[in-house]
Image (cartoon, rainbow, N blue to C red; front, side, top):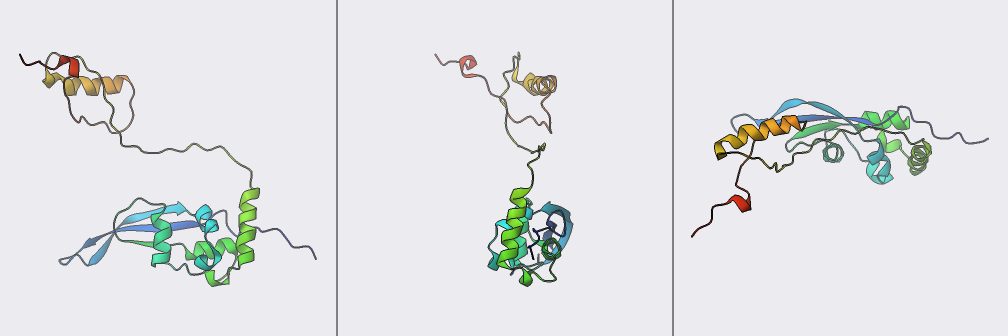
Length: 171
């Protein structure tokens, strides 16, 4: 009898990351800040089978997976165990065999490549040359220039300083 190729039980391994912050008079109570979903399929399939079999919800093992996908510096709870089980069609992560993991990796490699648009958020500084009669005009002119150049995102004025050739010289 010919072995059937691996077919996942779901289209991906989607985790749930609950962002939290410490509150209370002693700072010892976690308060939820909301939940974010993340796709950990590739990372899960890169894990060693022995590591994968130890993943538990709301534990260091799942938290580490979530922290690799969600930018949050604080307490959290990550739930991903059931998504892993659904993907591998098992009732417990401990039931995932080395062979199942190898077949899942082969399945992923066999998928056709697609084109995606990725949007990233970058905080950066842009130095704009501004011609002004007085430094007090620079902020308004810089913000106007940014709009004219269609610089997207939240634009905030930071600093202004004379260009080195315009600095007054001491005699």
